[in-house]
Length: 101
Figure 1 (cartoon, rainbow, N blue to C red):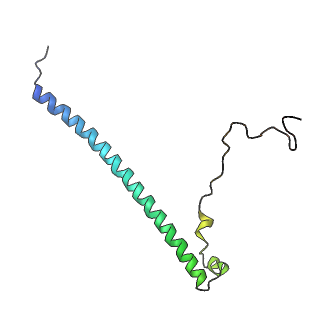
Figure 2: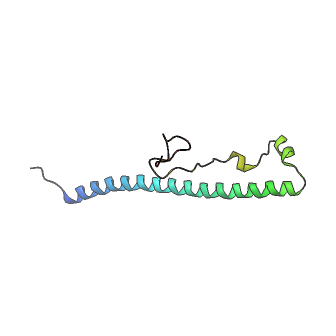
Figure 3: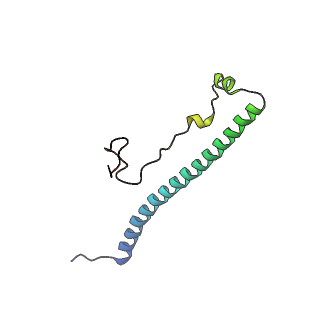
């Protein structure tokens, strides 16, 4: 059996762990940055909505703003659809009929 040096082995193990800790630290920093940027986007969208409303209060019509390329931000947002919670939401059932028919 080879003669192992405890201190050398511990140092090698620490080096391996340190590299793993560095990668997970980088991942956490990346996730924190994403969260910060999302928060900034929410704030920017809120400011944009307020500015649009203020522009309309100052006399700009929606059509005039649209001609300038300034449509309301709500038009550009993603729309969420309401999904059925059950596996069968009436698919395959004829209109105007019920299970009791």
